[in-house]
Image 1: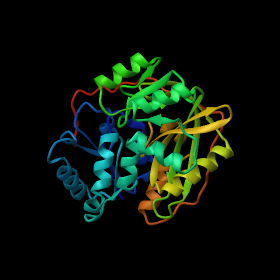
Image 2 (image 1 turned 60 degrees about the horizontal axis):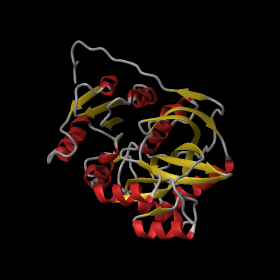
Image 3 (image 1 turned 135 degrees about the horizontal axis):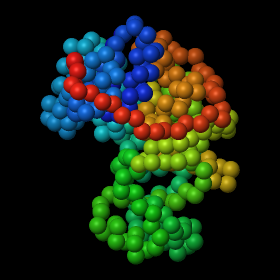
Length: 324
């Protein structure tokens, strides 16, 4: 069994974990558009590829899958997820399984307003959102919405171009300067993250890891502590199974006055996943099991609580780029 990790970048730990779980029964390959992506040198082999917006990018990846005899493929960056999901049949036709939810669910995850509408329809608490400035201002006049609010792109990632807005003048100025902005209720509470695996065969949630976020940096969890809450486990399980996600997803959650609010869903490995793995939530092993044609046994909440993760910088030094 061979696995391909696309856009590996600096996610060295993810590459290491898959190599460890394969334990010599297959190889882990990686791609990136730069030879200065350290994670590719952790793999058993790598390919330097064009940027994902290149016309021939998909053909290049399919060719690599054939050459490397890849069993399963996944990406670590948002812009590539829709491409994988949309072209799932092309990968399956050459014997490679994309580890990703269906295209419509991936697209919904990246459209924050559509996700808000879905959560609202399901009766799951979430921060109120508005696409229309005048509609939002009417709610302010009625006293049902208040400043500050977040103003952010409807589609975006890594917390880019998110602004905290304190008044109508600032709000109107931002919305005049930028298109496709969404107004989101400011959620002032404790922030949590959930690493969730939904079995690709059964569609059942087989693991959930919860962490309380202590410090964030550039949209990713920098410091966190593992926690457990049966109420939140149940809410997440109901949500993801009802909607139909598959594989690994990352969910952002706020707790305000005892109520959990789902904020965003990312259909990929989150940047804080190493915390889950080190506490005993082994997603690579579950992926390998699914790719072998076997369902995973649900084990929600089976991990160590009260364990802290602290990210720190590391470096890689190479005189030569090495053998591909």
